[in-house]
Length: 282
Ligand code: F3S
Image (cartoon, rainbow, N blue to C red; front, top):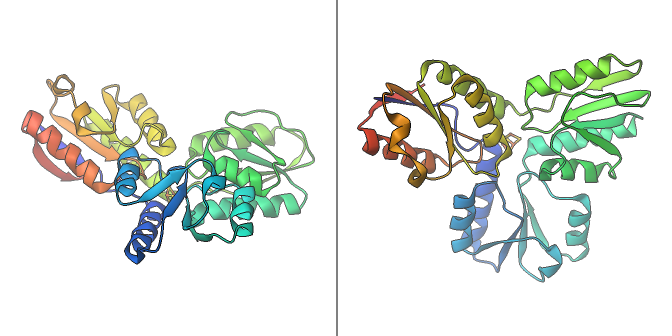
């Protein structure tokens, strides 16, 4: 059996940047380090950092001293203001592309547009964008009519281009002015494009990443539509030998918050289960 590993998989630059920032802080050994919620959506990485002393907290009011690192998907405007008012040391690890979505949303609102965010209303990034426009926006995850003379559209960075297109097509049916700022992250699209190509030639696909990771879930969902024999796992212990019965080629990829070491462990896990040969990068 041949195992093909995706070239574009694992940490994106925004996640790499955030982890580097935390590692740099750890070297300083200057008091406790907190993150607001998990810094990225990968349980294994969060646990590893926790073992080194990086504490994820849900209630920022419980932080009395130390350094607070903003997660890659951004924090709420009111959280940022609170931390500043308490004069706590902050390190902003928000991905610059997420910040760009927020800035574009603020600009649209300032110019009189009703802001539409194409995304998941429960995702931290979307909550962060909304908070920066004083919650004066609409979050949608399916095509629908939106009232208003001027509509400005931005998208959650991990959103699919197909959905964005469908939402925009629907909005263009209305009489209003529609302005679209494409804020989908290229790293997500690259992974998706490559994985879909792999899924066409592989007999089975393994997608590695946190079960809470929005981009990994979307990657898996899209792959599953092309290759029914696809599996989303977080750890090598979830690998099941029955998945590889009668299989000649298996494709392996991971979401943007999945560390390379985890993808490698799963690669060797498949190899030891099935004696697969390395098909190299796709
Ligand atoms: Fe940033 Fe794109 Fe990664 S938005 S955190 S580079 S998936």
